[in-house]
Amino acid sequence: MPAIPPQNLLTAYCQGLFPMGDDSGNLTWYRPRWRGILPVQDFHVPRRFMRYLKRCPFEVRWDSAFGDVMRGCADRPETWINEAIIDSYEELFRLGFAHSAEVWRDGRLVGGVYGVSIGGAFFGESMFSRETQASKVALTHLQLRLKDRGYILHDTQWTTDHLSQFGGHEIPCDDYLDILNRAVKLPVTFAD
Image 1: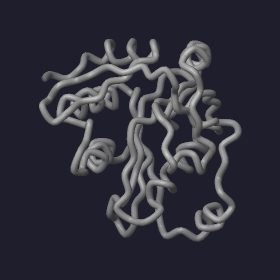
Image 2: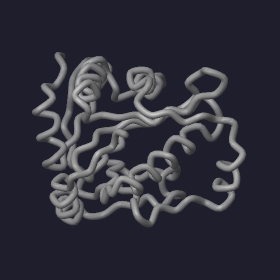
Image 3: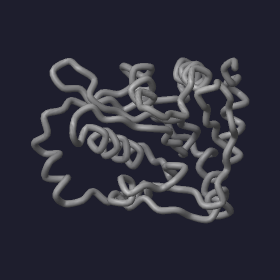
């Protein structure tokens, strides 16, 4: 299956839809009845993890290895990130709509998170970790950047135990769409 045209992908996000691929190369569009979000302004960092952040051995970079982060996220036995998804998001990255937070140690990429940014909405797509805590470091730095830049929505699609410890929760789709409609209109910029 070919890549999704960038404008189609951006329009879908603005309508609350997101794609997922499969190993056969097919794409399916989703808009769950309950949507996972991470509160941007009230982001919760567990106290113990905050102590870890102050002494962690990692370096965090932005947008320096976007494709590698995607491939790191796809490197698991079952994945929804197929080649059509990778091609589509790499094009969004080239256009300035997709971004990555990367965690490095000794010159090696050991974790990261990527997603799509439209106005004051960030759509977190996936994260990975090759070392303990690396994805949490990426997520925390991403969340702090979103707060600093004035974002009002961090869409996580669904909520996991991993996200719940940081305040992630689900809201009804109608409430999500109300926030989304406000967020995409904000003049917010992810990049420096």
